[in-house]
Image 1 (cartoon, rainbow, N blue to C red):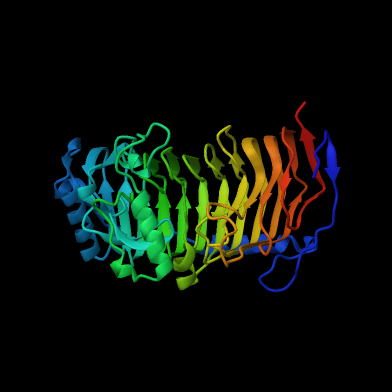
Image 2 (cartoon, rainbow, N blue to C red):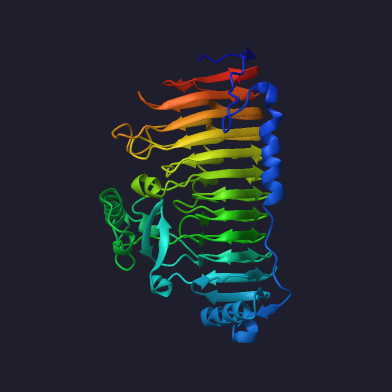
Length: 461
């Protein structure tokens, strides 16, 4: 599709009205009513009015004394009492992994800093976790809960993973500021991918020491009523906020500034009823990346992510503002993005879909409106079905029923970057009443039903 100064593209919205499928333009208010319904029912859990300060259990705010056991005792006492708030008061505390229990709100007060150890042995014993969409036993996430109900991390304090190129980030392997030689995750990652493909039982997928698979920062696994609000997250080993197989998830007012490898901001995976609002993401990878399991692990469970609302967020650096994939084998549907701002020469795309013929997955019913973008380094919309493994596989990914409406971009390299292969499905993808300025490169569109409807595209002078 050629681009020119002041080009206005007109078309007809060809939506569908069957249940579960994007409605036509004349019914464009209906999905936003669904978004409002999701927001109304995703509410923070309530906690008893009881406070358990970690300093009462031995924590010392000197940044050097190990507070791990004091925090554990405070959480246990809170849970035994029927729930409440575990308070981290102002000051600096050194800690290992924190495991939350049902009914516990870990409240990190303004002026408090939790600094997490960088010694991998502190994150033993191994726990059941999901690593890049694959279940295994590995180092504990820095903050973790499994099978709990009513759990929260709140407050205006700082969570500092202390990751850097001399510890966790080096495990990624060679890269910017990382050594060309040294122990890294490559062999273990390849082994885990092979185990997933072979159907090796999860109990036999044991990693940890000698494998170099980095832990996530915050991971709630199979939890219900999850609330994360206000905290400032820094220097994560990899993914920052990672709810897995959770329902009723509220992430609000969080600031994530973390630029290491795979430092995604928030990755709901196989989660249902999720609201992410009023957050700031300045990351070394995708700002928000919705997932549902990788390859056979995603298909084995077959649990999509869905009913997800993203609103009033600010995205700065990152590979994509809002992303679906690449671990998306379980599928994704009903995603709503509105009233967000994005702006950075290091933000690559506004809306991004990524999969391939090994991962597959169906992504449908994605709505974006009223998004203001300053600069984006590459495309406004990218659909990449050749990501990593490419077209060599039996599973055909699909993206269908997508609408981007009233998206304004001041500067972008191009509008569309569509990479696909025969047999994959890209259908009913529309940009409606969008305006994109400062375009410097032609679109790449390998195929698929993608149209610009009443849009303005202006090439840079």
